[in-house]
Image 1 (cartoon, rainbow, N blue to C red):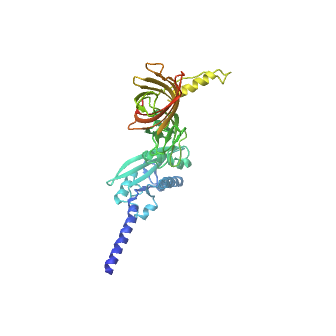
Image 2 (image 1 turned 90 degrees about the horizontal axis):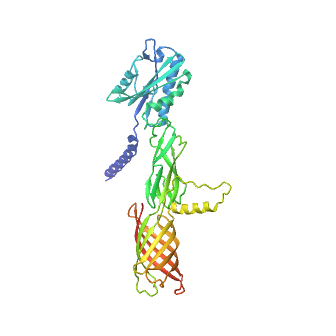
Amino acid sequence: MRKSLCLLVSCALLTALLGIAGPADARELPTTVVLDFLTINAQGEYIEPTLLQQPDIINLSRVMALGIAARLVQYGEFDVLDNVTLLSRVDALPYEQSASAYERAAALFEVGVADEVITGSITLLQNTAVVGVQRFANADGTPVLVGSSLANTSRVADAPTLIDKLLSELFPPEVQVIERSIEQVFTVPSQLRMNLGSSYQITAYALDSMGRPIPDPEFLYFASDESKIEVTEDGVIRALQPGTATVTVRAIGRTARSGSPATMTVTVIPPALGVRAGTIITNRQGIDGRPMRLGLRLTPAFEQRNIEQKVPSGDTSNPLGFISSFFSSLLTNGLITIDVDFDPTRELLFAFSGVQRSAAGYIGTGVGYVTPFEDISEEQGFLFRFTLGTQYRPGNRVALPIEAALDAIFPTTDAFKPSFRVGINVGLDLFP
């Protein structure tokens, strides 16, 4: 029994150790060997700088290799070896000093110590140093050139400053060993019209100074008016109230952020047309029961384009300009709803209501007039209307509202006294 218990505990410990070691093994990094740079001899052949016995070239060859290795280590996605640390895995370098870059890569792939080999060359042309870098990948033991870059400088001492430029061109755009600065951010589309209560996913792009896309940038989203729209950290816009707001998009990388953000203009529009069917639940003079009432709702939301209002500079408080701007904003943002209700064979009601809408519901107040169809001696007059409603959205362009309408009627004749009505309506709202 004791042996069985010990065996069970041993198996549990072994399983735990394997579970801990599993994720570390899964994080195996590709081995990249960065070799000292070569130089050209009198015969035009690239050889090790030590064979020429020129201290400046020897030092520059080593410094360039160390600089590239340091950048790869900082990137954190490579197991980096150089000429010195490579000897910790092999007894001796598997190539001759006169071997070319291709031959050196082939020898390292053959002994199985590298997945990639990076080497380069230094060529002096009068007062100019030309530096080239090559990146070889292992294709079943055969070197394949998968990246190369070239740069020059007028001073040999300035050659190490070319390392970042060389590395940015040595790897594909999705491998950002050197973080490229974000120069431009834009969104598609730049202007958006959304139905009230709907959602939209922003599509944003970040480009570098050469117009190349930045892979996997992080975007930050800001809304100019959070009462009109809501923007999540993932870039999803939700339309809350009719009106216009602006979304500002910034892109950030690991080391830099965008200089100029992108902006998107979002216009939230209410339902343009609605139909209602309901009844009046309060008792009405001279009428038994609760007859059906039908209704129509019209909400104009005009889009203003290139409209300029010229106000004389000497009169900044022009009342006509203020009134025009006020009513223009009401019609543009869809804040005015025209109500048309009628009881078949009895009366017709008109009302103009200012409606405050949200994704959850709406509330409105307005004024109107009620008139009978036939006998003008019946109840008629001006009315004050208060509306409270909510809606269910089965689709992006359809809403199913339910509302309560309170009408306070003030007759224009002495035959009737002021009265109050409470109606319940259901219906269908359509978005443009």
